[in-house]
Length: 130
Image 1 (cartoon, rainbow, N blue to C red):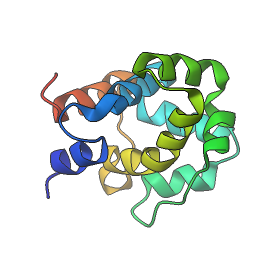
Image 2 (spheres, rainbow, N blue to C red):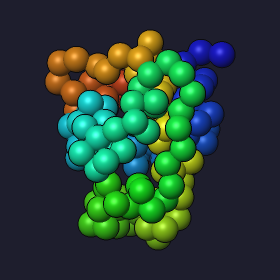
Image 3 (cartoon, rainbow, N blue to C red):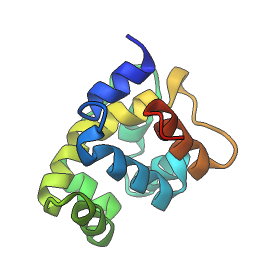
Image 4 (tube, helix red, strand yellow):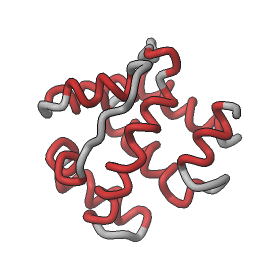
């Protein structure tokens, strides 16, 4: 299965079911994949987020941890953009974010360079939107 197939399946099909837009928003608002990883590290979840980037098993994250790290304001804006409430979005992110970060960091390496742009290009390119 290709990386495209894996991420497409993860995000719920070609359209991404709105989760693609949320993922792009998260990357854009937090400085790309590395910025998002740093935010989780600063939020006390360094071991958890390191497992997502690394090549081993991905540790779980709870919706409450997602909310604590990302904050109510950011979650509310993202939830509104896809028409769901913040509790639903926190739950979806808790289920999907570990695998998404894992897929966007192949070989356990964070992207280098302009982090926000690289993360967005990676997602957009996977869905033919680049």
